[in-house]
Image (cartoon, rainbow, N blue to C red; front, top):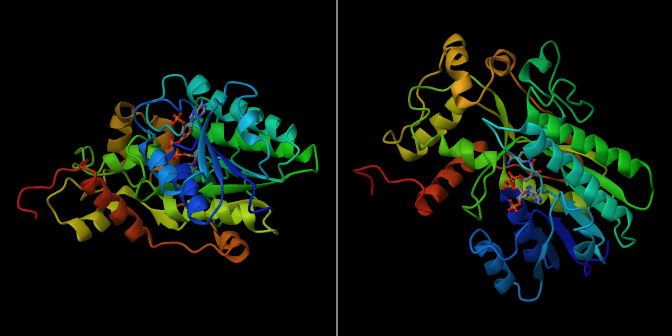
Amino acid sequence: MDPTKPVLVTGATGYVASWIVRYLLEDGYVVRGTVRNPDKPTGLEHLHALAAEHEGRLTLHQADLLDEGSYAEAMAGCELVIHTASPFLIGKVRDPEAQLVRPALEGTRNVLGSVDATPSVKRVVLTSSVVAIHGDNIDMKGRGPFTEDDWNTTSSVDHQPYPYSKTVAEQAAWEICGAQDRWDMVTIHPGLVLGPALTTASKSGSMTTMKAFIDGSLAGGAPDLAMGLVDVRDVARAHLLAGFTPGAHGRYITNAGTVTMLKIGRILRRRFGHSYPFPLLTVPKPMFKLVAPVAGFSREFVDKNVGWPLEFDNSRSVEELGLTYRDPADTVADQFQQMIDDGLVHKPIGRT
Ligand code: NAP
């Protein structure tokens, strides 16, 4: 990989991609970031600031996942393409096919179609997810932690549409990659990504998850729902390691550990005190099942996920990429502190 060649990052405005762009610039690379609307008045401030700080090394280019060929111009001359753009929505999704599956699947085909047509590209790093590895927590019943050999076989447009979108997009990507031998592909599989954001404009499910700790929606308790968790800074670093480590290949689970909303609440209470509406109690599964549809979760989701353990084996990422993981307690505390600093959380009375 020629370090003087530009690196393309799709969806550069995103929560994860913004950190990838920042690390690439800090490491001295030239970066081309694609955005849907480079002229929008808000949401790009952090990228403009990075461009000013690293003069002449970050440019923004218009492209849309559903606009065929729109990535080609920005890709010309790049050896590494990091494809992160894909919607991550949790809770109520009105039209999962249109809002999740089409952009993920057609978008991946669109970007990789341009990769095929761009002779300079040598490697693609694709942001997949642990949800392309497993669908529901119950899928771990009777077996050990999930590994990169596992595929999500249980999600559909109607049940777990976001995991389904990530699974079909990654499958299509491997199919396209396998049909040629000029470029290779490495896929990154984060658990739920948390940690400080460089932008307050992201609509990522990561933001929605943390907002639940300040808006009072968990004050009455939280379901016993286990999730993988990883720091956004470690996920971004994993993309760079995947891009520039010569022997990197295949799929890499990037996950620091398993948490529940209650465990996150306990960490936050230890660091920030008792004045915020952090959850104290577990909502019993039958009770959560009754109210779940109001919060955008189906009863099938509750049956197959709440109360079931979940574990991932991250050893490939440690041994082959040399990735190190932050303590999840620091990840959530750093994010909450940043939400306070950004004015998203009002300090409770009595706190200085
Ligand atoms: P995010 O902040 O919402 O970023 C998503 C990005 O995708 C945005 O830059 C958005 O661009 C772009 N995008 C969405 N629809 C598009 C379209 N039709 N055309 C072009 N761009 C489009 O979410 P994120 O959390 O950073 O997620 C980034 C990637 O990580 C996704 O592939 C996601 O599946 C994956 N991932 C995330 C997590 C997590 O917990 N956050 C975990 C595992 C995997 P605009 O700014 O133009 O809207």
